[in-house]
Image (cartoon, rainbow over the protein chains, first blue to last red):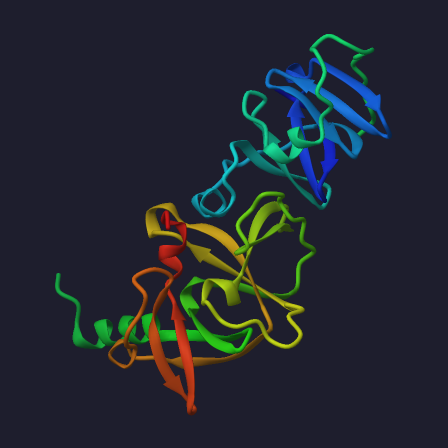
Length: 113
Length: 150
């Protein structure tokens, strides 16, 4: 994977591997990003980043943050978490509207790095 | 080959050398050999759902860095103005799996020699024990224990 969709939510920056993005739509002033686990809510879509250098989440982070992550990286000066599309952080799922999959006008967009 | 008394004494002294850091109402001691850098507070990006000890992620030398609240780790009462103007970047975890972490603190104070025999108590977790420096109680932090499950 060489491209990642970058999102902002809850003051943090999140990355989703581009092949894992099934849909992207604006909804009620926020963004809804669909991955395998369902719809994620983002406050902002920063764009698409390439060439991220990803590191595994270390034991210290895992001890104090009980979410799955596929890795950590930095985009510019922003630290980010590469989410597991099968088990994204609950804070990303929490605000997602509860509606049947496939509803709405989901589409895929690419921003600029 | 057995270590000479001089060599073992030197390594023991190095192991006993600590950076004293104010964290809340406590002074904590960090093994100096584990300290990589002392910086003005790094910009932090909180991770929703994290434990209170984890203040967030920061960027350090181009890499992501988890930053922890040293006062909470030491179970110190928060100071009157917990602004955490200092981030101590240090190695944590066992030597075979060490990783860099940031420790948000109030001030870096001084370097002190704390002989192991003078350190007593400890909670079996992150606080290796306590000692007294200049009439003040100092909590010695075991950074190697930081990467272990609580």
